[in-house]
Image (cartoon, rainbow, N blue to C red; front, side):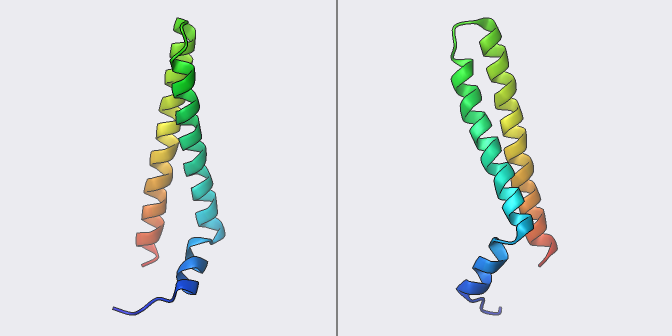
Amino acid sequence: MSRISARDALEYATRDEFLKLYGVLVVGWVLTLVGQSVATGMTPFGFLLGTLVVIAGLVATLAAAVATLHKILAER
């Protein structure tokens, strides 16, 4: 097993492709939090809208996590 310097690891993790995936991950997480806040509203429409936003956030988060893992394993 070869040793990897901290500089090489940081350079690898901050490539343009990874930054886009990190952005999608953060947006998905924020959508999940916002959707949970909206879903706790008293109206049925707010609950439905919040639930849909939570689902969209979870899908975005899962997609970004899987894409990041795939990219790391594919470049190995």
